[in-house]
Length: 467
Image (cartoon, rainbow, N blue to C red; front, side, top):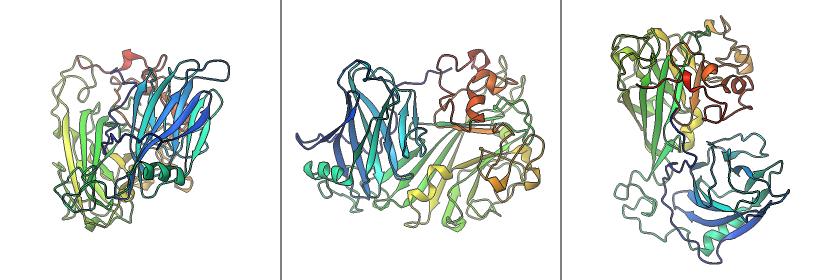
């Protein structure tokens, strides 16, 4: 199992903010338990976004009322935050996972959090900085330093953020705008191109992984390696937060299947018109997919893109084992990469219109276009056969908005916002990832970090290793 960094500071910052707060221009509030949170800087990026820097500090106090930090969370309206980053400033604080929300479990608000924190609080001093971008207007935001049973929440108002912004003179028009697009050079990643301003990434911390079982609606061997893809999305927006282009990168790592499966995805909703998109980069080598002239799939009310239609024509079967890169001892095949570009009608759709929650990746089973496998509770496309719902092990119930789950809520597809390893052929995922079943059966409330290499979480003997 690859080591997952406990200081995942590769959350790609789309805005490089090294702004030093003017002395006396920051604002500090006391969470309790030895923790304080300080608004260090608020930068108006002059493109309807603000970059905010919070400094969290523990004074090293011990005793029964000063517990170790268990997680840190920030309130934010869903769909309005991006580019979240954490950097340890002093001490040796660590964390195990980042959650992009919007729901944060026990926290009484929606937003984002860093979970599984250690080595700060309960007598251990330290500090860390969290930086993020708010899209639209500044917001009232609560900040929680959860330790023990105490949420230790402070409230920052819009006026608090504005006072730090104004005191530090980080409002608009303090930096040049070479291309005149309204996106100042200090944040413009394309300072010589007036049609684009910023790169926005999903997941924020690098690549994510999607994995599938292809025997739906039957449960199958449940090893979740019938198709393994790492993915990342880059969306380019202009100074007014309108989308210019989106780039989807898919790395086909393995498929332990005899079926010749395809893969596609949907973005946005029916409010995004197919006619407003132009798609290139797909790799179709069979004849069962019908496309419109702009590269989107025909017969779909929501824009649908088919990345490839036969995994066996993306990676050549080397002989030996089942599928490719799932059987120990069988020849290893270099992963294949598919890159999709989507150009949008200009100045029509914002980043919120294609936010991460609308990314709906799905597997097409054995070139049968009517059989799709989606993430749990994600809707099928218009071309899926609804007669398969509720058959075999599937307990889809559209009236309850329940899709692609068994009686015990087990899924046929998973999406993890970081790269994870996968199972050897014919090994049930629950035998390798020991907390997977309780996580799925609890609808995600238990063991949300089931994929992390914590003690008692993973049986490494069941994980595929490239020999």
